[in-house]
Amino acid sequence: ITLDLPGYCVVRGERYGYPYDMLSAYAADSCRDFQLQTSLSKQSLLENLSNGQTDILVSLTADAGHAETMSLPLYSTTYVVLAPARNAAVYSGHGGSIANMLGSNVVMMTAGFENTESYDSMLDSLYGSMLYVSPLGGFDLAKQLSENVFDLLICEKSEALLAEGLLHNVTAVYEFEEEVPV
Picture 1 (spheres, rainbow, N blue to C red):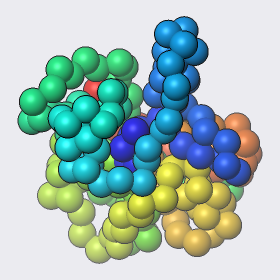
Picture 2: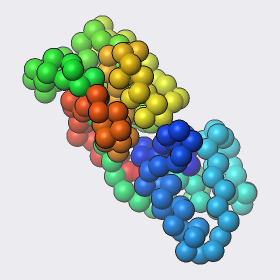
Picture 3: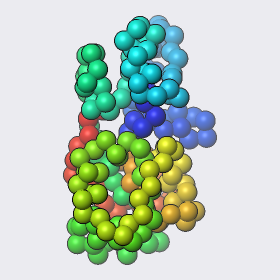
């Protein structure tokens, strides 16, 4: 599983997400050993797949599309903007414009968002925002958001739902229209 895969996260050492559940179920159903690799680069994971060291690679479809492999999207997801719940009303008056919402805030985003068209479009319209890309997962970043380390977080929708359910003090204030196949 690539580290920036939407919907895959680790919370307190426990793995969560649809991709992880699908691989676990497949391994159990087919009586196969299940070893999960997440610390390798995408290129290393693709090389391992090509030379037979890895049987299945779960990645963003865009990343696997150029490899000489069979790519089968499992599901589609979207990205959302999370804000501290106490500030949610501040961001509701943005008139539907992501540029107006982000304004001059400090915005953290998960690495997977960089691979979307929404990211490219957003960059074209932003002025004054401080954008940072983190290698951390969406849940870990949501925890930092709840502790006021930065103002807003852009992460995958299922990570945001997990954060909203477990942290209770963050909420989604914007959803990007683009569907991202996984």
